[in-house]
Image 1 (cartoon, helix red, strand yellow):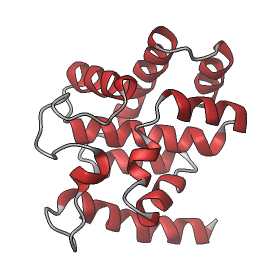
Image 2: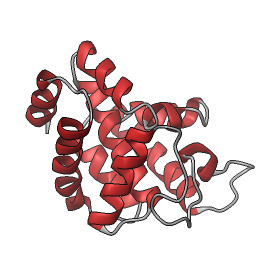
Image 3: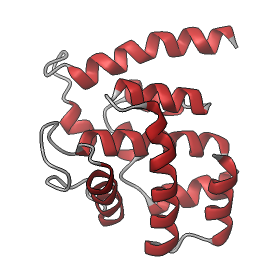
Amino acid sequence: MPLMRHRFTFALPLLASMVFSSASSGFSLSEVLGGSDEAPVGAASTGSPMVDGLVGAVGEQLGVSQTQALGGLGALVGYAGNQLPDEYAAQLQALLPGLNSRAGSGGSLVSGLMNSFNSMDSVKTAFSTLGMDPSMVDQFIPMMESYLAENTDASAGLVGALHDLW
């Protein structure tokens, strides 16, 4: 466990610098997340109508930016992908292809960060790094669950597994 804490302690400041720095060695957060850091919610497309709809709903209802909505949802999907059985993790990735795959397109560093969400504490730390109160995780979760249940072909098994996971 100390190794994981050390790895996350190293990764978190790096993630924070990427999020809050406008220029970090040619790395553009907007390229990774599919939009401008300053753009209003829904202004830029992730390339996935499902993800765009979910990001827009979360941003509108919770009053967070597109970057915060996308990052928070990405952290939750990253955590779920690490914890769910392979069948459900694959279904979640297929339903929301813009989240982990979009973040992962920035290279192995970002992909590695997405894979480091192995506890809800790491998800809450990511929310804090994105400038949100960690308690907002509890507001994102039911929105994500209901969006998947009402707007996608998510199986009842996946929705139930997600509900049990949190």
